[in-house]
Image (cartoon, rainbow, N blue to C red; front, side, top):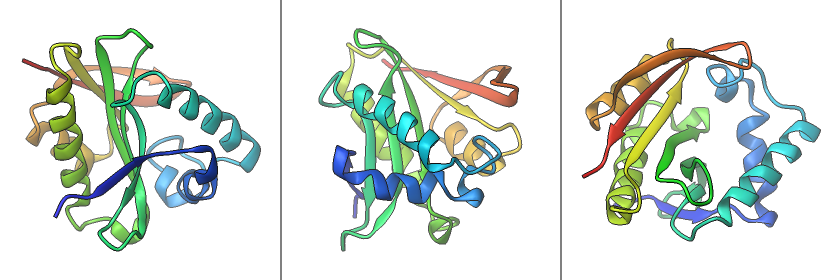
Length: 162
């Protein structure tokens, strides 16, 4: 059964903060949990990006019973962009259950539905996040570069559509 995905709205900050305020979730993203004020600033940016296009943005991930699992991301680089970032964050109690793979598959299907508008997907991971790397490679992503993101190590993987 597919996961339920709804775009985050202004009313969903508490769920977002459950993720970004969790040190386990953020260990391979920012290496630290975000304090509430910083999380609110980032959430405002997320909501702005969600307004760029109806099919792109950051989505609440829910199971069939409506339980919050995490965040799925298919976010445009810019409002008129031809590339989008694919990503996800899950609450720790849902790790190791194949949900990351399901999220990637659903987001990839949506990206294909948006072709030819969308030409390329990219994902940014911590090079130490072997589980996420395996999921992305399984879905056709290939290594593009290693680079620093605000002083943190990152690996960029990409996949062309078409």
